[in-house]
Amino acid sequence: MHLVLIDPSGTSHELCATEGETLMETAITHDVPGIVGFCGGMCRCGTCHCYVGADWVERIPVADEDELDTLRRVLERRPESRLGCQIRLDASLEGLTVSLPARQPVP
Image (cartoon, rainbow, N blue to C red; front, side, top):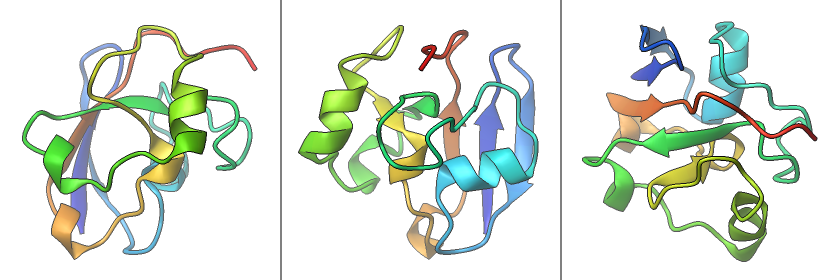
């Protein structure tokens, strides 16, 4: 499956992802600048904070309480903010577009 990550400089990265991986794992595998994933996907640090494209917000499962709690501590939070470690990729997300914030929190 394919997705697009737009890094903080505005550069688009078209990535080939494996179903079942998280968005964070895919970004790290492809060395996309702007995703750190310091906690390894445990939904604790917020360093995989991203902005889901407007066309995709309703297509991704709603954030649970753990994710919402971590999102309260990220920098530059927006209504479309999510944690990349909590977005599990599957065929329904083919073509997903996500932007990355200019800054990630320091864990």
